Image (cartoon, rainbow over all chains, first blue to last red; front, side, top):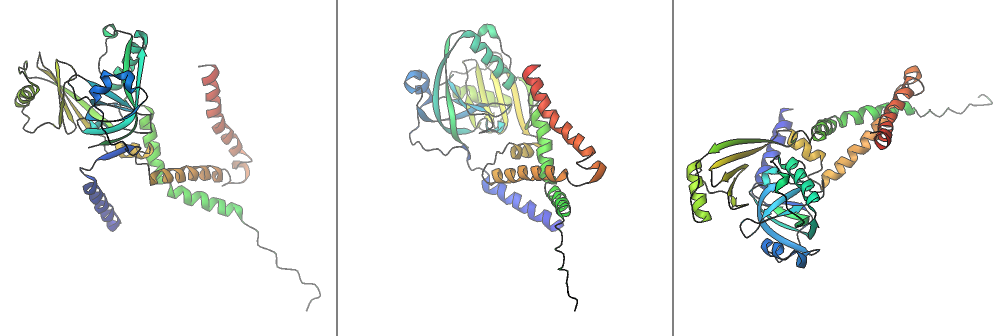
Length: 154
Length: 197
């Protein structure tokens, strides 16, 4: 029994050392070569709507409930974009926050009414545990997201 | 030599014996997996009430209003006042009044005009985190097939379980009622969900 435990411990330690610091891949393999700037996407949502893109940025927020989205910082200040994945298909860990992600997916630019935006705001507030004031919502508004396919986080 | 020899009777296949062996041994094999899936099942069932993977702690601090013309100056002042010797892994300004500094599993969200800081630290819940990762098939690859084999094993254990005992307590007696109750629970609940709740 003692020897079995020792072997398991050695294997676990070797595996953790081997993978420490290496990028963690999620979902489909990344295939695009060219990186599109998040600021370009946010400035021209209609141009990119429905197109597959590869973006790069710091992970500044993660869905704390299901790990079903990450928010990536733009190359410009005060801007970010949500990279949304199907529940359960990819689960992003909360400790991805602060790491750098390279991610690929399809741009979705949809215009929402004030009521829809308030519903979304409530849902996000539930997921993030942060306060939400519906009176601050102005609309209609075009929300740009990346429907995520795959990501590599380091 | 006798005129008529009775051929040796073919030994009867003892299906119940093999049924019970299968039930017992598969049952032993899946103890570990059942604990992983059972414990994680309870944990992830209540994601509305808690985070089953991470313990998130938030703490408030005050460092005074931050001055600085550039982002780099703001970061330097914040680090000095927070006593952070290392460079952050990343920094982000979601709006003109907020600066976020990211360290390993710790985020500092600083309100620049007031100097109020929310320090959020994230710690994976030991054992439960690993159980949930396996339950939700985060590793993918070979684990997908192990999980499939486990599901098939559960079906075998359920079916063989019905035939372990014979007689009054078996499937022809009390067992039939208990199996019926077990089937009615999901069917009945789903009908109530559709037409009543």
